[in-house]
Length: 117
Picture 1 (tube, one colour):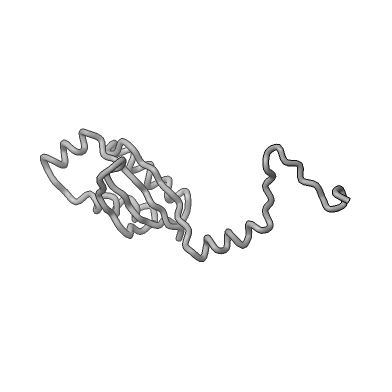
Picture 2 (picture 1 turned 45 degrees about the horizontal axis):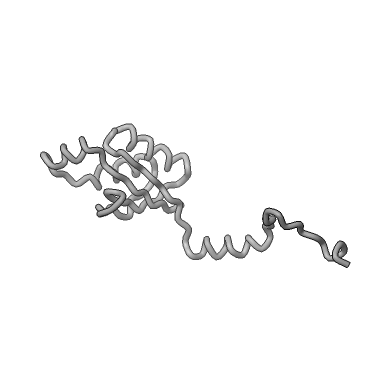
């Protein structure tokens, strides 16, 4: 299954509720992800631009989106940002396949060897 890294920030209201009634929010994340057919691999809080990160997998982009929509609909986060992760093998495969993909450089005319001669 594809792996994802999601960074999140809580709303001030969520932090106020957690301050009054501390709880392990990784379980709520796990439940949402598993209900979408995925698996939570890790949940961490962070200091910086985001309040925390999760590492998880989902069987499809639709499953990914369904979990994120459910989390957003609960109105506990102010930001959700998800990055699709590639394994080393997947990245190597992409690098190998890129040899067959051509992308021109702006302002540079590509000429065939026959045009050069």
